[in-house]
Image 1 (cartoon, one colour):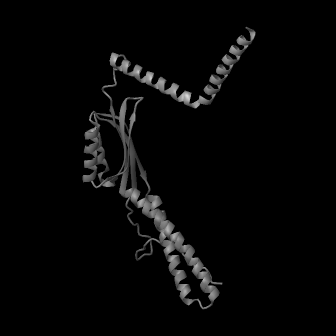
Image 2: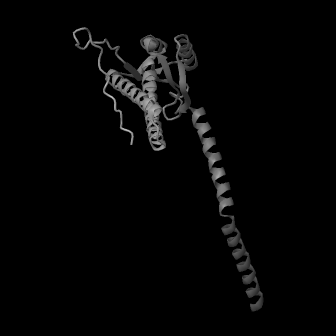
Length: 247
């Protein structure tokens, strides 16, 4: 049985008097938010935003487009990532492209403590891996070799998981995220509800919908219609025969 070498927590560097030396830690900040803006020329505003985004080294991670008929407006929703140092500059560009800012929400999260914790755990796991590698070199029995190799596999999995967490956190810090909702109200739809052309078009549309409904209704219930027709025909023949028999 190979003894677990263990590992002590990483100590802070010390000076000649054996007292901890404070190390300056750069703050790790995550910026994210949402902004909803109105623009009369939605396509021109979108192009201006994406051009500014490209110049600042950002990119669009997701985009969707839809027409909201209920509110008579067209929407673009862009999820963007922008280098953290250019976040405020790009936010100003977004505001400048808007004819009206409907809403804006910006959140700033300090993840310095979380970053230090993950980094420390990663260093400790790496040191532990090195100690088990040293034990593997000294192991002579096959049972000990297999036990150490199993432990190394477990430690390596933990290291990769922790490294993934650190990489994700670093990316969140390096690139801020912003969701932009860009919309344009329809001018033609504002006061057309009572116009003759609007009402005439709607009437034609309703009539066509009614014809389609009747047509597809007949197709759906054609067996029932056929049975009713046959019953009517048979009843008429029966009545004719009865009348002839009574004469």
